[in-house]
Image (cartoon, rainbow, N blue to C red; front, side, top):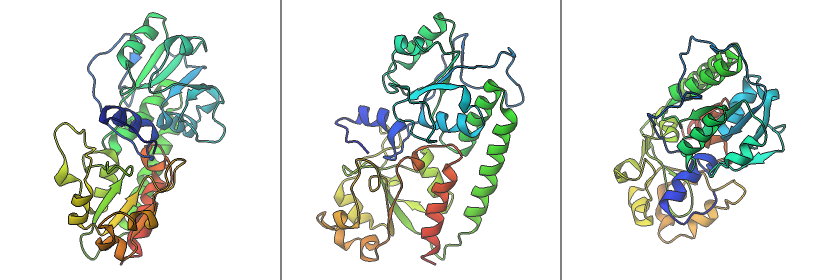
Length: 311
């Protein structure tokens, strides 16, 4: 994950970058709504206007993957600068952390998906509303239900609700089977590292919930503070004392990430940690753990495969 120089910027960046985490994920709620903006839809209600969007801009990597997964990819004309999957995403890239209304409007979209944690998201939505451009405010989910709800919402908005339901059924079935296939002989502790400055995730975050479904114990939970949004920064001494059985490196396989077993061993005191003694280090692929679309199944598979090697 790219390095950040303040907790605020880290929290904003994590929503889009992570893995690199990351990862990526601060759950933000909002109660303000505009006439032309949508945050939640009735799962059983199709697009009430019967006018389906034909020019969609997605300013969220997860939303981009969702749209393509449900068959709405051909209507996507531009994406954010972090959307890199699938490989046929539009080459037109727009800023996601600091969205520019003029740049968005110049593409003449009829639906814009914007992350609630983007800088000035409320103002951007209001400006789009004034221009009669419909928007969908994406709120980072804290669990699978939230991920499924986004697929439902986008399916309703784009007229691809059947495809969305199929994607949800696929995810539910695969994830259920993957989790059921892991039988731990004892409770294992773990440390999920977002970057080499020690930022991690608690069980209250979306990523943390994935680990929790396997019955793993998160060492970051005890270090959580009210103002860290579920992403505490752990000191090396804390990690060493917690002595996790496994370490998952979100910064070990990304474009900018180069953390590995070797670099961990060079950190003062880390050689005594159980996970390093036993080489229970997992290098996570960039992007996948930080996104909550159908590829989330791969994140579950990675965890399950490693856990099954320990039994």
